Image 1 (spheres, rainbow, N blue to C red):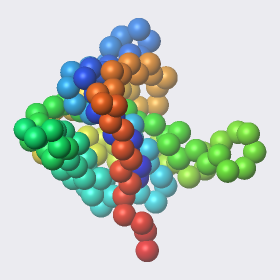
Image 2 (cartoon, one colour):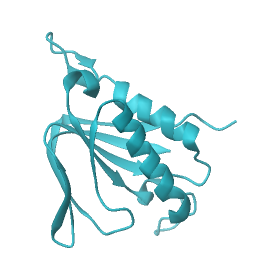
Image 3 (cartoon, rainbow, N blue to C red):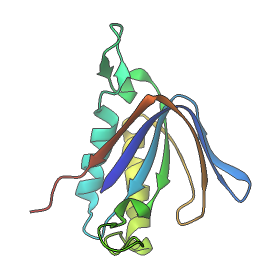
Image 4 (tube, rainbow, N blue to C red):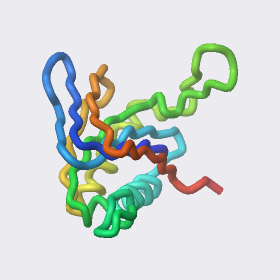
Length: 149
């Protein structure tokens, strides 16, 4: 599982001209799932997202989590995070989870985030989406699940 976290001042997702999710201060999460991901991966990454310290404390150091800061989540499913570009000019998406496996894992991921007390807005799985973002910082990091043994 791979998640790109973008700290945002404001973000939204629009599908067919209709806003499906919008937040002010918080994280935009681009969520990629691979065919070997499990609920254990989902729980690990959700905990990491909720607890990673990307918000400034009173001394201006990134020392606070989104839970401590008080922000929202905009979660966007993005299979292209598993695009392999090492060969040729067209990415291979063979490592991305099939929709029937990815959708329930993405939904579980969003529920895990809610269990941390976070408000979660979403795009629509499998749809073409317009994502608007004012990146705060800019702060962008990638979180991945533990390597499989």
